Amino acid sequence: MLSAQRLTFLFLLIGAVVLASSSVGETTGNSVWSKFEATMHGPLALHQEFEVERRVKLGYVDQVQRYQLVVDFLQGMWREQRIGGGDGLNRVFNGQDLFEFVPGGSEFTHKKQASNKDELLPEPFETKLNWKKAKEVQSLPCGYSGKDHGCVVVDVPIKPWIRPGPTGSVITMTGGTSRIMIDAETGVWLRCHTVALVESSHGSSQWDVIYTIKQMSFGAAPAAALFQLPTGLHEVQQFTPWDEGSIKKQLAGKPAPDLQIKDIHGNSISLAAFKGKTVLLDFWTTWCPSCQSDASSIEKLNQKYCDKSLAIVGISVGEERETVEKYLKKHPHNFPVVLSSENQMPLQYQIHVFPTYLIIGPDGNLMTVEQGDQGFAKLRNDLKKAGLETD
Image (cartoon, rainbow, N blue to C red):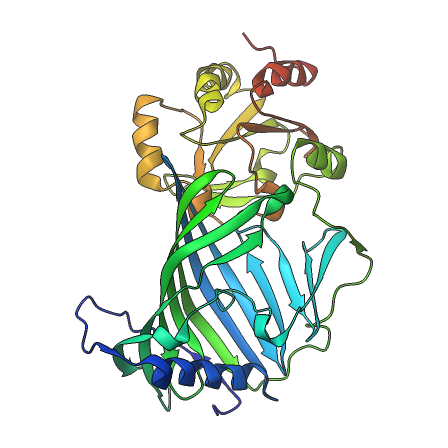
C-alpha cells in the first residue's frame, strides 16, 4: 500500500507508439481490478482529483464539457463531486444507499444497491467493463514524486447496459472501449479514455470522455461528514429541471450569483463590474435556429444601448472555440462572447434550453428569465420595464 502522504502527479502522456501489446485476459485485467477493490474497501482513505473532458456527438451537434471531478473512498463508502460542469450533482454512497443532490439545493434522490454484483461506483469507475477480455497496451512508470510505482495501460471492452435517463427516458450503451492507465500495485486509476456508442430517445450518439488525474492523497483522514447526506433536504423521485420556471422561483428578485469568467478574447468579465447597468445574459448555441433568428435583434439592442445603460454578454454553451469563431465570422457580435467550454460556470448558469435570456437589474438582482422560441418576444416587454425600448 502507498504511504499516508500527499502525492502530486507529473502525468506521463501515453504516446502513439505502443511499446507492447498482448492479450492479458484474467491475469492482468482481473488482477488490477481486484487490487482496486481492495483499495476501495480498505481502511485508508483515497482522495482523487480528475480533470474531465466529455464530448458527445449527436447527429450534427457536437457538445463538449470540461469540469473537475473529486472522488473519495473509504471502507466501501465513496463521494463524487463535480465542479464547474456536468450536471452539478454530488453523489454519496454510504455502503448501502446512494444519495444524489445539488450543492445548495433542497432536493435529493435515493437508490439502494441491488446486489454486490451490481456495485454502485462513482465516475469513472461506474462503466461496466469486461476485465476478462482486457488487453495490455503498455507498461511504464506511473510518474509519482518520490518512490514511483509501475503502471500498466489496458484496453477493456465495455459491457452493454441499460439505465434510466432524465424525465423517464432510457439510455442504452451498445458498445465501446476504455483505455485505462492503472497503478499495478494498488489498482488506482490515473487516466481513463472511454469511447462508446449510446442509444436514447434523442437518437444515436458517440461519447468520448477523458479523465486525467491531477492530484491524489492516500491515507489522510477524511472529514467525518464527507460520506453523509447534508441535512435539510427532501427526497424526490426526479430532480426539478433547472429551467425558466425554476430559475424564476429560486432567483428572481434576489442578487444574481456572480460570474468570474473570460470572453473569447481572454478579457475578464465580472457581473459585479456591471452594477448600475441592466445586464442581459444571452445563452445560445450555433446549432439553435431560434438563437440565429434572434441574433440580429440582440446586436441592434447592443448598438443602441451599449454605451449607456445596458451590458450584453453572450454565452456559447458546450461548443468548441473553432466552431464558435467560424459562426461569428458569419454572424459578428460586438458584445463579449464567452465559451462555457473554457470557463467554469456556476451551477445557476448551467443552462440547457436555448436560447435563454437572463435580465439582471442595475441593483444586481435577477429581474426575470425567458427561454425558447418565444424568448426574445417576451424579452422585449421585460426590457421595456427596465427602461430599454427595442426596435
